[in-house]
Amino acid sequence: MTNEEKYIREKMGHSSPFRVPEGYFEELTPRLMQKLPAVGAGSMPQQKPAILYRLRPLLYAAACLLVAVLSVAVYLSDDKATGARQTAVAKATEVSADAYFEEAADYAMVDNHDIYACLMND
Amino acid sequence: MSMAIRNSTAAGDDQQLKTLLADSRTLRKGFELMVSQYSEQLYWQIRRIVLTHEDADDVLQNTFIKAWNGLASFHGDSKLITWLSRIAINESLDFMRKQKTIVSVSTDDADSGLANMLMADEYFDGDQTEAQLQEAIAGLPDVQRTVFTLRYYDEMKYSEISRITGTSEGALKASYHIAVKKISDFFHRHD
Image (cartoon, rainbow over the protein chains, first blue to last red):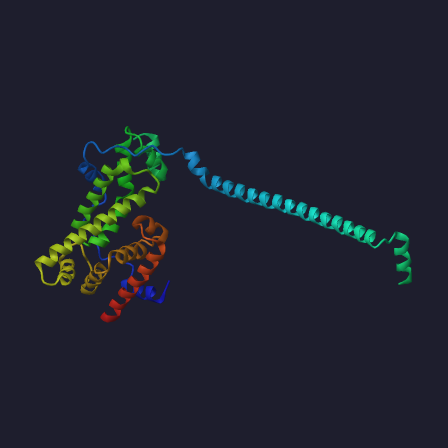
C-alpha cells in the first residue's frame, strides 16, 4: 500500500456514509423477481463438458511438452546428420591427400626405398 | 426446494448455478438463486457510483432485467459475478452520464449539485466533507472512478477488474494510482 493510500484510508475511515432502508435486502430478491418478464430471451447455452474444461491446463502442458520433445528430436537428428557429413568430408579429404602423395611420388620416380633413405639421413 | 437447489445455495457454486441457468426447466429458480447470491454485492457496487439509494435500486433492477434478457448470449466463459458486475458497472456509468446531462442543463454548476443532493438524501449519513469527497470521486473519469471504487472499497484484484471493464491491468493500475493521488489531494485541500 502506498503512503497516499494509507493517508486516504485514515481520512475515509472504515465506515460507509451510505445507508439502506430497514429490511431492504431481505425483500430484495422477491421484488426483483417480480419485475422480470414471465418469459426471458432463453436459457444459458449448454456448457462445454466439465471434464474437458478442467483438463484444459493439463492439455496445454502436454502440448508444450510435445513441442519441446519434437524440437529436441529435430535438433538431435540434425546434429547426427552434421556429424555424418563432417566424417564423410574428413574421409574424403584424407583420401584425396593420400592420392595426391602417391601421384607426386610417381611423378618424381621416387619409390619407398628412396623415401626411407631420405628420412634416415634427416 | 429440492435437495440439489438447497446444496447449490449452500455452496454458492458458480458452476452449479450455470447448470441451473442452462436448463429451461430450472432457469427461473436458478436465476432467483443468482439474484439472492449476488444482489447485495452488486447493489453496493452500483450505489458507490450512482450515490443515492433510489437510483441504486433502479439501476440494480435494470441490471437484473438485462441479465435475464441476455442469458441466452452468455456462454459461461467468465464467472457469473464478473458478467453481472460488467452489466451493473455499465448501467451505473450510463445512468450517471444521463444524470450529468440533466443536472448541467437545470443548474449552472453541475458539480455543486451533487454534494448538496447527497446532504439532502435521507440515506446518506455523511457530513459536508464526505459529501464533497463523493462529489470528487464522481468527478473522476469513468475508468479511474470504476477502478477506485472496486479496488478501494471491494479490494478486488486488478485481474478481476480487468475482466469486468475490458481494460488492461496496466491501464487499471495507472488509473488507480492517479485516482488515489486526486483523492489524496482533495483531503489535503480540506485539511
